[in-house]
Amino acid sequence: MSISQLARTNVRALTPYQSARRLGGNGDVWLNANEYPLPVEYQLTQQTLNRYPECQPKLVIERYAAYAGVQANQVLVSRGADEGIELLIRAFCEPGKDAVLYCPPTYGMYAVSAETFGIARRLVPSLENWQLDIPAISNVLDGVKVVYVCSPNNPTGNILNADDLRQLLDITRDRAIVAIDEAYIEFCPQSSVAGWLADYPHLVVLRTLSKAFALAGLRCGFTLANQEVIELLLKVIAPYPLSTPVADIASQALSNEGLDAMRERVRNITETRQWLSEALTHCKCVEKVFPSESNYLLVRFTHSQDVFKALWDQGIILRDQNKQSSLEGCLRISIGTRNECEKVIEALKSL
Ligand SMILES: *Cc1c(COP(=O)(O)O)cnc(C)c1O
Image 1 (tube, protein in one colour):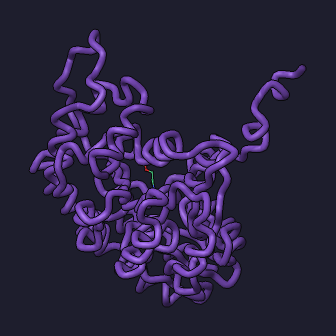
Image 2: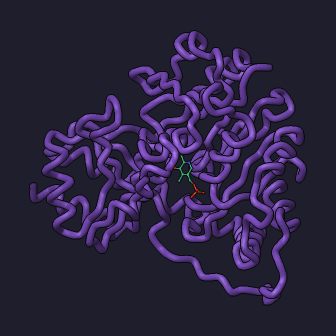
């Protein structure tokens, strides 16, 4: 038997997540992964690398709980929010029996994690305004153990209506976990549902340090949920999910100083986004700039493939969204520095 035949059937069939890094490109203006455009410097303060780290570093948990306005026993820290997505499947979904549900167009890792574990996927496309189709979700909930929704949604940039999220939580009560992915919530903090944990035992909120905290390379994310859910996730998490340097830097990023710096970055990115959004509407090749509450813009172009290629050739790397349902002609542009955004506009003006 060949090595590839030895692999599990679902793994052989799997298309891995097409991360911006895997897709490559030879650019100097990277606007394809919703990263913060500039590095933030940290010094390591923990030198005890001979010892294993804490599984759930106490200071990181306490500081994140204080920041998010929840109890420490309602916080789990993991190797990015992506690990949180996966832990939910590992703790709640039985291969060949249970399913996960999500609403395209949305973040790609819900599909990849489900496929990796051989868990069935139910797709309920969002409405034309990219809000949830609650009646359609309600019709296919049988066998669904985890519902993933993303707000603000990647790549569309919109927030989900709070009333719809409440309805979703009502129809799933005692049946399924509802994971609300708030990877970009720092750009619209008033829309967080973290304050709803007391009302819903099955609510899970996913967070990350990769976006507004400018720490995508750190690989640190958080799952907020009631203690019963957190304890189940702790059963399936690796014994040492975070290295000592990661915990060290994460706790600095969550200090009062770190939080102030994050909020300042959010103000800058939001201002640049408003500038870019306005400037894009004056470009001939732009059909529509969608409103955004995040650090990226979804834009529909008249000839998006030509635009993508022309900018790529000039070292400006965007994210092509043409393959996602209902996103024909759309590219996603992460908000870079003001200078990087000006380069985008210059390149588009010459098309
Ligand atoms: C970036 C992103 C994540 C992944 O965050 P990591 O902490 O870097 O794993 C999760 N969900 C959404 C919607 C994202 O855009």
